[in-house]
Image (cartoon, rainbow, N blue to C red):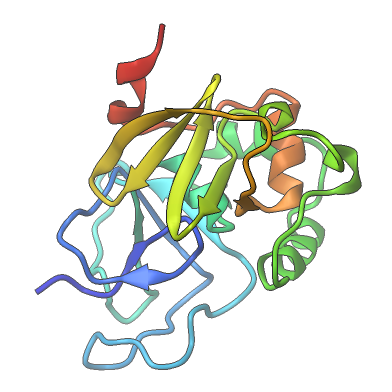
Length: 201
């Protein structure tokens, strides 16, 4: 039976068979001894997104060290509030944070993660959905979408299942934290699941 460690774009954790293409954690262990979850959903504010396989590293998904989490892709991980890991993805992590200090960045980011509802920063205020950067994730009527070009790609744990043309007047909830929106707007290229490429021109 799958463990409850598959991450949806809104940060919620689910027990599904699909594992995804990237690994991560939320700063340590927050599962119980029987590998189930209680009320806790993180151990610290240091939420990271890692390589699914890195060199010879191996660990139990819910072992003694930390609670492993799985993401469809990096676009999903960013929406859920996870930044690139400095251990297994150092080059990408440095490019992602630029000159920001990790501790300060994570403190600011954690406030954004826990804000209800999430909102875009003033730098994006008043723009249409088309004005937001590629890799931004949204929720609309209970469905998750990722923006890629001029389309919304409908998300699922197994991949992107449908492409919908974006209408500027669409009403959506932005899931990707404001700090990450700014980084995507500067040109950071997140990793997409292969199913997202099928609609590229």
